[in-house]
Image (cartoon, rainbow, N blue to C red; front, side):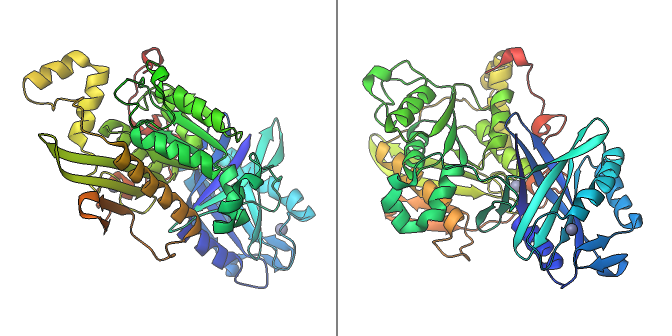
Length: 468
Ligand SMILES: [Zn+2]
Ligand SMILES: [Zn+2]
């Protein structure tokens, strides 16, 4: 099992500043939402509680003692909100490993956490300057044992990844020597990181296939690809990796074949289902980043919600050709980066609640949908828009460039724009600003980073036998 944590950069900075501010030990608590899948347990840090040094009972170089009046209300709040509890402290002048005293003292407090907040999983972190060790404490009968946290993600203007000091080193999946020319561009560390990333691509048509090919050749370690469409003779013109013989095969299987033929050893999971299928959407919780390459509103709304509830950056894209009587009037490519604390696709009016409702209805209750179309209450779906490989590939490249920007900051760390329009008919790129809407779910602290919930993504899903 992989154990990981995701912080928002503002929280991480505040915690680090407090914990490393004094020559003596400092303490804090964090509360997290949780995402549990077969592959990974991910803690989503939602609240930071700094422990003022005045209340510490002892504060020596490697010994700290906190009164229960400090943590009991925090545990109660964790229980009331179904959150996980982590105890954080510092070892100012030591290597950032848990000490013998930590191994003896921590389980007492964590046991109380398991009694008070029984639905959560609880753990601890220790800081030494900028280095960290982190672990989760697990129950086995009456005793507790610990497992290391393998990875810490920090999301802000930049997307950073830290390997805790106590985590086992994971081997490179793809030999770094294949990427000599890239390493000359952005260095060995980024290349190693790319090999560790797990990225989701939703939609494997014109833009999606161009994203997949670039991700593989950049050296991404593992991919999950989602699309329930079959290859037709009319879409081979823009699907990278497809040939005429592929007609009738699932697009994701053609992508899988392309990834295998490239031969780097990239892990790939191809899911020939709709993103509106619950078991499929659940899979995306394990991603470090998701590319949105669908052209429907309902599919986009699912990845928008995943981004908000699971703190997963999403890069969504679209290519739109306006053509009349065979003459192009305009060609617009759009790339939108969705991150916590930033406006989501709803805030930007990139998806419409009306269209989401119609698309969902067309799937779950086709008769009702048909009636509503005839009565003029629902828009007609499935109209085929113009598409050309030159434009879909260009938008896909812009989107992958945004991933490289997130990971490296090569466009400048203060580059705040998170949405771009490529006006191809005008040879112009526009940066768009936007604000989070006050009442939007992306601005609701009850929802942000909530992780798993009784109703996944807060919506009603059809029963399992109706898989899409
Ligand atoms: Zn300690
Ligand atoms: Zn929003």
